[in-house]
Length: 389
Image 1 (cartoon, rainbow, N blue to C red):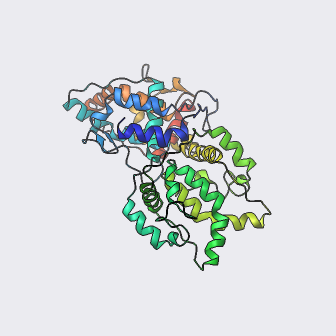
Image 2 (cartoon, one colour):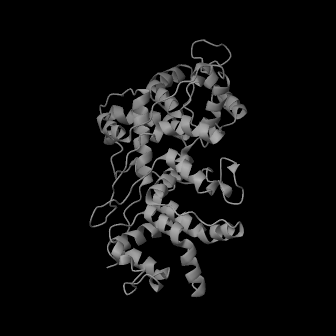
C-alpha cells in the first residue's frame, strides 16, 4: 500500500470511518436532502477513477500541474468554501484538461459527495513531523525532566507511547494525566509550557522514532453521534455551549491537524481545569474511544457553513451576472425549479458536469468568469433555495 493509502487507513478512518449522512437545511424553508456527506474511502476511489491525480497530488504523490490537495490550508475550509474553490479554479482546470485532451468524466451526486468527504477530511491528516526538531523540543520544553527517553521501561519513559499511532490517543492520555503532570511540574519548579504550530507533530514524530519495533496500537472509528452525546454528558457543553463565547465550532484558530488538536488541549488544560473547579465540576476521565468520538463530533461541526442570507444572495446572483443565463424567464436554465435542492455538493456537481458548456457560452457572450468566495456561495445557495424570490 502506498503512503496515501497507509495514512488514510491508519490515521483518518478512525475519525470519520463511521460518519453518517446528514440532512441539514441551513435555513431553507423546506428541509430536504440538503447535505449528504460521502465516505472518504469511496472519495479516494473517485479521485483516482476520475483521473484527478493526473494534475493534482496528495502529499506529493500525483500530478504536479495543479496544487497539492493534501497541503494543509491556513484556515479551515467549509463545504461552501470548497465549492467556491472548485468554481474559481474551473476555467484554468478545464484549459489544462483540454490541452491534455482529457474530457471531464461526469459525476453523480454520490460521487461528488464522496469526493468532498475525501478532499475535506484529508486536510486533517498530520504531517510526518521532524524527529530531530522533536528531540530539541524534548529538551527545550523540559519534557525530559520527568520523561526520560534513554532508559526503556524507566518511570515516565515516553518511548512506550510510540506504539500509539493515532494522535487522538495522545490527546486522551494528555487529558487524563494533565492534573498529575501539572502537580509534578510545580514540585520541580517548572512553568507550564505551550506547543505552537507543528511542535506537537515533531515531538510525536521523535517519540515514535524511539519505538519503531514495538507493536502498534490503533483505534476504532469515532462515532460523531456518540461524541455529541458525550459532549453533554461529560460537561463540555457547560463551557463550550453552541453559539457561546467558547463555541468550538466557531473557533477561528481551530486546529488543522489531529496532533495540533492534542497540542491545543495541552495548552488549554490549566485554564480549563480552573474553570471546572470554579463551577464545582469533577474532572472527567476519557477512554481512547470516547476521545475519538468527541473529536469526530468536533470536526464534524467544522464541516458545515453558517446559513446564508437570501437578500445578500440575490446581490451575488446579479453582481456575478448569473441572471444573464439563469433568469426566471429562461426555459432550460431556470434555477427557480431547484428550490430547496441546492447544496455545496450540488453546486460542485453541476459545475463539474456542465462547466465546459457553461464556459463556452460565457466566452461567446463575452462574459468573464466571476470568482466567488465561500460566504458569497452560502448566500447564493440560500437565495436559490428560496426559489429566487
